[in-house]
Amino acid sequence: MNKRLKKNLALVLSVTVGLGLLGGVLYYVGWRSILAQIYALGFIGISAVIGTVLLTMLIWLASWSVILLSYGIKVPLRYIIGARLSGYAVTYTTPSLYSGGEPIRALLITDHTPAPSTRIFATIIVERFLGALSLIFFVIGGGIYALLTSRVEAVAKEGVFIGIAFITFWIIVGLVNFTGNFKWASRLIGLLKRPFPRWERGIGRAVDKVAETEDEIYDAFTRHWKGTFLAFLIQLVATFFVFIRPQVFFYFSSGRTFDFAQLSLLFTLNVMISFFLWITPGGLGTGEAALIGIFRLVGVGKEGAVAFSLAFKIVEFVLVAVGLFYLFHKGISRLLNRAKRRRQQRYALAEDRCAGDRCIEKGKRENN
Image 1 (cartoon, helix red, strand yellow):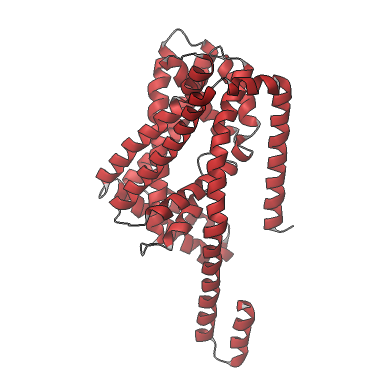
Image 2 (image 1 turned 120 degrees about the vertical axis):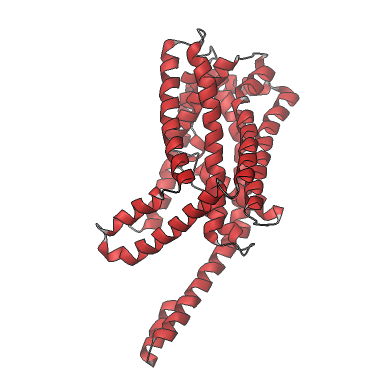
């Protein structure tokens, strides 16, 4: 079974599992009560939900644009928007909410700038890392408040503590590596040469590219630190809009408000389930099932939890559709043309190295 078929089967299985879980959740909760919760938002509430999602995306775009400019990379805004939405769509539909679409973003941008691909990829990694730092800012700040308050149950406090420890550990590892330029990623890849000696040349090239990207990331925290700091502040604003999502939804649907500790609890546990349970496209089914238990900790019923999740996911799926449309109609043709150019380059190199007609003919067959 080839890799492409395996990926297609995995995608079909993931979608099937997600829809099955979602169907089970809707049956358990009652789809009419869920629709009633969403309908209760009214026009203003629905507009607030849509606005919250759109503002978050616009702020993410602003953050990445600042990083690109700090590196001296000038790309027309329409290409930045298209690449960001395409990357978001791929990340959203793959088994990880926080990564997956970065290579797509890089490939869609490199055709519109003379900057090296490693530098482009570095800006994307820095943008994602700053987003993770902004998550930590809210998780730690709100988590500490939630641990100290008496309004949060002991079992919930334990979950918050585990979430803070887990996320903080990996962010600190990344921060130390990037700011110290220790090149841990390229060194780990280099270790693969021993168990896979046949691929030593390819692994060596990968090590060189990753090391070059790590150098570019290091520049973000040294030479370009002002732009990096500004991008981080912008990321904090985007994370704030994610942080207040429960308040936006339940204020307009039922007039309910949450205090800072409750919002922190919901935010921290939601980040955790996004790490561990985002195994279906959009976290479909798994996210709704988990949110039922999470929102119960703050006294919200199962209908409200599922309605909250679906209301925001509907808007996010619209952005995903736009990103996939751009990717398939604008990006795929570029990727195919690039693959064709690479085949032509390999053929040209084969011609240069060949000494006779037989070798040239072999190169032509490979090109075809």
